[in-house]
Length: 637
Image (cartoon, rainbow, N blue to C red; front, side):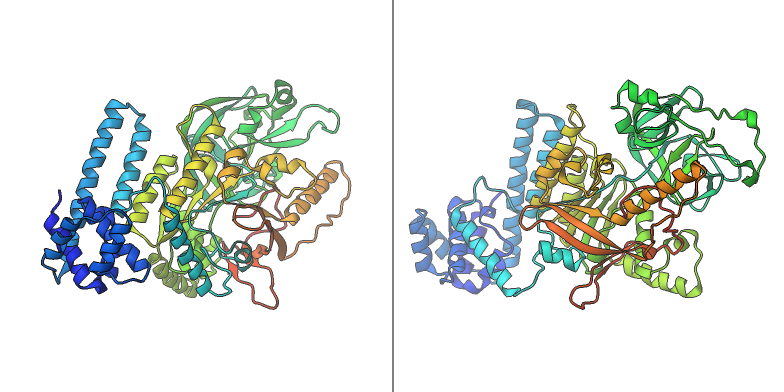
């Protein structure tokens, strides 16, 4: 698996014509040569080139001697070799033989770790994938990097930064001028956590029937975009988008209602059954399944599932009242298994009914940080664990065309809009967006797929994961240990591939119980390892969301008591938004000011010294009623 004559011929050609070294050095590495002395010679040539010294016989002798690697006979063998003019074929032979030797070494290693060391299968697979990636990239890792190499590398980086002048952007563009000012862009190898409050409501198990507005029942997996569900106030709820994935599923069992299956992050709407302190009979509590199962028996006895009392005068169908038991129901939550879930985003207050009029929630939280990157011609890998690729593309096309998302969903377009959409589709088809929407991902899955994609498409500059808590792991020691493995693995992968990895993460719902609802690092769900591994942690905060929700709650409470109440919240077309840098390993923390344009569900930079704001568009939906935001939730990021 080597040919010393070919190696000597290439080294001889460099000595006789040093001008070709730079081109060859871009393709060859010292370890590609088989003979150790040949490796020393090529490494010596690299040092001479860095020192801007001639690559000739005398300087090469001096360099090899100073490094303790001089061998007069071996050097004479190189000098005696006939120099070649066409080095490409010889270079290809050296690379091919180097790869075969690396593969043979890997095969020996695999045999050792699988048979002799008896390592776990996943650990072996990860090691093999990593080594194969290194072989593909022709970059074997060293145990230690010497000070000289590191210093030279750093000087080159400082020279690069000097050439940029006063540019605020040294890494990957974040899409926001103000955020670039704070971070200088996302760094290569950064793990960036974008944390948001979990969406209100999630999804149901296959076969669960929901009540349609026309009075029929339909299995959740058969519901389509544009259809109308029965709301808790006897008015329709339009389905805006669909969701499908896999997660831990739980049975919700009611003693006076149907049993139904939900995913772990599903929101239960419960009604308090007794007065106690500040808690009043009839108070509504929205709580995630994962939080509910940790509560005490006393807590669970105080809250029951409840049924909606429909206003039959508003209905378009007749109802057999004896079919429905409208009493509140004790519930019990039991683990089932990991399985498919289905759900949807709906308009209005997000409340809809199951077949027996039990109240539940649904909405979605979407990460869409790819738009500006792919517009710049960069490649983005997007792991969408909750949203199908088609739904993601629909939102990107809405952004590209400024056609309201709802119009695209139902195909209600004018001729001009169709023309605009056609042009945008052609543009989008040529952009470097790669989506994995398989729905179930482990760190091994992400690592393997991203390595292969990066090797095939070097233009990939960013990877996005939506979202971290939906990833699964191998640890049997609890969810926090799983999240720890995932966050550590993502950070290592970001460094290996030299790209930033952006992961959406959830906040604990405890943030809602504080007077100051600005998120903090301690609000990260399963936060310890995430906070430790991340280079940047960002939170989105819109104060108007909480003020509007609090005012609406006061209004609803007054109406329930038969009192008049004037809602004092003033709805503005633009809201001040804070992008809070809770952690920044290599720079300052603080707050970046943005504006949130409700009508377009769009973030823009706050005005800076008369500059025109730089827009990052997420979706436009002219049909969104911004006066009715009944759930407290952060905007899409």
